[in-house]
Image (cartoon, rainbow over all chains, first blue to last red; front, side):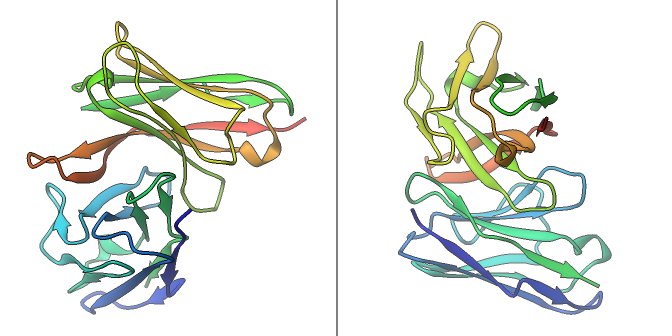
Length: 106
Length: 124
């Protein structure tokens, strides 16, 4: 099973600042990595797939990069609605796995 | 596209439960469909997947549920199911169904549609 480790666990920032979230895989996942945003009481929302492709309707301030074992989600300028928990997910192998999440808080 | 889960409730340890996920706007038989769960206050855990294909499809399970949970679908009702047996407190979670998306170039494009979730509580 491929383990995903996200860092930091919590990121304290202000609106307008840049957020950089990390996801590290225990073995290569190629580019089979996705990012999700989850707000309290809501289902997760797909942001990025294939490491760097924005999902439909996702604002350009969200970008993904990386390959193999090291990945980054960047939010260029935080909007108030971006404060949430973010998860990475790999689908290189079954079982697919999620990271433990990074909370972006004000 | 809409996915609507149902069936979550309070159940005693050792009990069984079947969750349903009614789909509209997509065909469960033509898509890879997964169940993902989230214990209260914790992160996401993938549970099971059923592949696309006619009368049946390959299935995979997380080790934590293998042998206890069974994923299936009813093509005529366009509904996905999760049969859960031998439930324990560790199975307490919100259960989501989600579609495994693929883009036009057949590249995996993430879990792109999710239901609102249904809460399963295992407690005596």
